[in-house]
Length: 322
Image (cartoon, rainbow, N blue to C red; front, side, top):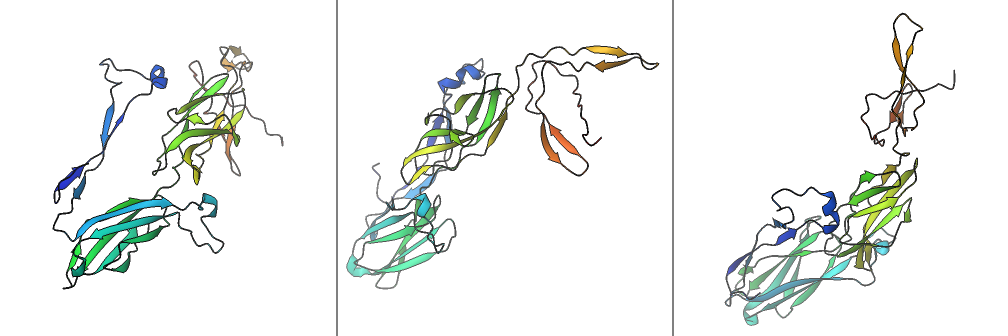
């Protein structure tokens, strides 16, 4: 973008989002018909002051570069010393070099805020910083000290350090007699593009890489089984091939949804009539043991999805020691 010397500019990024066509059938569309219009989210405004023609500093730039030999597996040496993930190449250009005593370069990471600095001769124009803090940013500042001892300070640079994406969040949205449906969130990418997603069931790859624009999958299932599902984001960077695995989603499938209506019979063993539930129900409800203490057993059947209104649950149990 062409800018004028010495002027201050405000820069803002606007992101537009819209409903994906794959999900339209499952989403309520408002009567006003505006739900399919893009929604906008704005970033904070960034103030940038351009260098003036009279400034001693003519240009100041920083660029991150991955070390080609660094992988996630070898970022830690045997002595537990962290290897740098990459390097930041810093370059500057100044005018009136005869009037410049030296340059002072300062930098720190947003992770530890420990400021480091190095002094350079007036003829030097570049320096390389080892970037060890993945998914953080480095603040870099240059100070020009002239022969009369005056320090000239300029706007700082902020250099984000790329890293593997965060793990997606995974949740269950639908179950049926033959399958269940899961969805996942868009992970934060930290400058490394996500090109797809990989599903895992019981620790094994469940399919080919899922397209990056899809965030839902229908998984075939059998009744009365528990499935453990995970997902990770896949990148195009050979040094950061994928994100960490998502949390494990446990899906308990249930038998066919054909519940027979409960029938009652009247007990005449006492003076008062009492209705009792007939135990011949055609469907079993999946029950899991949530926790066990010395005197209590906690049961959970929240995975049960009834197709009719349930008035009450009856728990029948027997102690095997009796």
